Image (cartoon, rainbow, N blue to C red; front, side, top):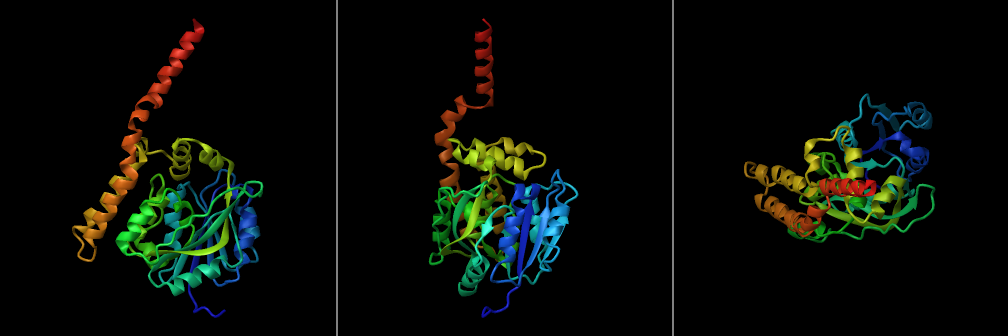
Length: 322
């Protein structure tokens, strides 16, 4: 291997054994052409304990270890926990899905991209998709690279993306930059918020090859086919929060805007090494691209919410009884 030796830490969050696909995922990880890495698999207290199955899958694999959670953390806290397990001298870090598939050169080429682009915070490839049964679907790859842009251009271009963070977030990170941000925040669309903050620290570099195959679980596919965002929000709330907090009953875009304000502009007022202009620019652009469109939806939200649906349902039942 001609690459300079880097310390690579991979963290896999698993729930219900990847719904029957974790063995295939692990096979593609262990078959990587870049073989010098450490993998920690964390089961988030699945109702059906997968410990026996997973331990048998990694029994002959010294690069892998397994931890069974004693209580459910939810996907965001689990991501933070795995990040905390990485040694302080880690160079590159990636979260691994428990049901996706990875081409054999996935890790090698992402490492090369980070080695070559010293300002890069994350490298990621084109992705393709398969359904739960393995048949190919029409998932389109994210086409986005900001490696030649200034920090202000990067903020603008990333926040104006209509979709894509779900593919970027599974890339390979420069550990020191990711560690300063932390894992996924306990918010709806945590990938978008994490990457929105990370884009101020470094560039996003894309490999123009299909190296990652995303597998759509049925619940996610149903949400994607929904005409509204309610399916996506409901799915994420179930995955992120073992017990739903009160703030998730507020539209997530408002919550996320407040979160960014607390994490970026306000701390920048008191930190000499934090660029206040960049922090304010990030917050204002988030408002422009994510929060302002909410007002266009407001009239629809007034006539289509839980209360109005309950009233319509009650009136309909009363009419049917008459």
